Length: 280
Image (cartoon, rainbow, N blue to C red; front, top):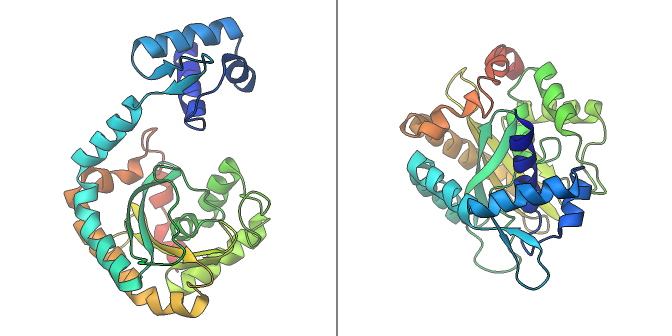
C-alpha cells in the first residue's frame, strides 16, 4: 500500500469516530503524521468529496459520501432484501432487537436489523460497526465454528475486549474465551450476559450450509432484566431456524455468498479448512 493511500485511509477511518469534527492538530498527533502532510491529505479528501471543513472552528468531518456508497453497496448486494423478512419475523416473535452481521475477512460487521421491542428499554446499537469478537455474542458464535488456532489468532490480532471497556463478564484471557466457546458449541448458539455491555444480554447463531464456512451471524439482543438466560434458551430453536433459513437463501446474495473470501483476498480459506473439526 502506498504511503499516500495509507494516510488517506487512516484519516477516513479516524474521522468515523468524530461526526462533529476534529482539529488538524489532533488528527496529525493521533495518527502520527506530520501536520503539513496531514493537511495536504485532508485537502485532497475535501477535493474528492469525502471530507468537509466546518465553517466556525475549521475542524474536519466526514461527508455522507462514504455512507452513501456503503448503503448503495448493501442495497445492490441483495443481503438486506433477503435478510429483512427473516430478521423481522424473529424480532416480532421475540419482541427484541434482531441483527445480522456479515463475515468479512477477519471482521464481523453489522449490516441489518429489526426492532421487535414495543415498549420499555430499547437496545439499538450503531449499525455498520465492526464487533469485538472476544466478548460479543456474534463474534463468539462465528469463532466457535472455526478451528481453535484460527479463533485464537483472530482474537489475539484484534485484542481482547476488556471488562473496563465492555461488560463485567467479558473474557479476560484466551483460556476463559476458549472455555466459553466450548459451552456455546454444545448448544449450537452463543449466549452472553453483561459481556459486551453492562446490563445487556444477547445470543447468536452462525449462518452456514453444511460444512461450508460461516458467512454471517444472526443475533438477538436486549436488556438483561428482560432477556434473561431462561428466555434466551426458549428462543434458541427459533434463532437456529432463522439462521438455517438465511443459509439456504445465501446464494441469492453476492455478499453472503462470498463473505468468507474477505476484504483482503481469500484470507478466510484456512478458516474453512478443518471446520468440521471445530464443530465436533
